[in-house]
Length: 209
Image (cartoon, rainbow, N blue to C red; front, side, top):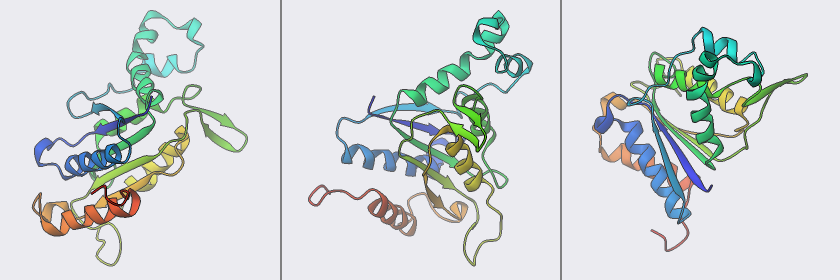
């Protein structure tokens, strides 16, 4: 299926810069590829379940040996993995919470990153079992995380990069919306930065503006 999976998790909804930018990114993708479908997964509205004992035991056993409780514990995981398998592009829009990913996004990661299902162990390390695809991550931060103005660490970017690589998605592109709290939603500098990033990474054909 030629479609985008849009994963969002900001609890700010209409006031969220990561959501607004992710929507513009998806719009750019659809303008570049008319007919591209869209599948939404809003983790703030429907947070994935946390890992429990039944899940932990089930992922260590062959499916034929699962108890009814263990099968039920894997239902959400199978549904979320199926969304990844059914789509060809991944877009994640997320704020940074306490230097890393928000809790709902971490719960999503724990559900989709499964030994024997989406990755396997090899002598060289973990190898992804999902098809590689274009992936874009929009990250909104309250402060600066890069360059001379950085005053806080960024554990989100390397962590998400490692997670996606383990799934088999090797070259995600990150769009950082820094110091989001200090700007208005539609400030001209912020819009200019977003437009510049889109034009660099997802340029439109001449005359397609």
